[in-house]
Image (tube, rainbow, N blue to C red; front, side, top):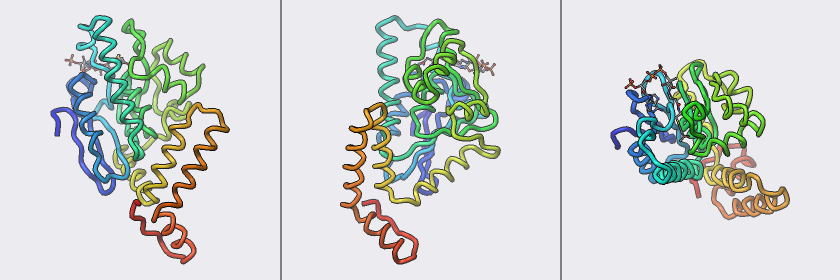
Length: 255
Ligand code: CAA
């Protein structure tokens, strides 16, 4: 367990908390390294929930005090490393859910978008405020924001640096829904509902969507039918279909 990133199992779901509340969970090198270490070993978890510690923030961005010291070369290294950690999060085989419980600004918004889905508390605030600091998003914001909300909206948010509250985040596709109660509990419940399904099939669904984002439809459909066929080499496919035909609940083994 790191100083700033901790993880705990809640049933089939791994809950990962970035916990550096004095800096509103800002991402410095150590936080990124600890997050990378947690992502490298998710065990047999069937879903991952990512959230922020404390009352106010998911993650308020990359660490501005640390970035203030950078030159062009070290800034490039910092962005490359941050991007690589977020790429690992995005590429995790299991579904990931950002439970956004306050500020998700800059690197925090980017972190939420590297997750498969985002649930927002009523107090969640999203945004890419980097241009206020004289920089641009560096952990994938200019690219994943376009994919989430479309080119025009992404341009508006990046150029204006304005904050987006929870309801609007849902309206523009930055978050899936606003949660009235505890957003982590709700994210865990969502993770558990996913975990009840065939785990290999869920992972292959994720692959089919992620790996083919931006591909021409023809090539993407080829990839889809190959993954569909692969399901038929699993015990879970036999079990899932036998359970349906036998009018009973499936008992998946994840193979
Ligand atoms: N980096 C470092 N420290 C941060 C931080 C950040 N991104 N965000 C907040 N903090 C620190 C503050 O400096 C403050 O520390 P002290 O108590 O030691 O002064 C503490 O967290 C609490 O913050 P505030 O007093 O500012 O809290 P607030 O409630 O008044 O405001 C806020 C909250 C609106 C989120 C404000 O803190 C803020 O604007 N933070 C910066 C947000 C931002 O610009 N994020 C983008 C960073 S750039 C980036 O992420 C680049 C990239 O893409 C890789």
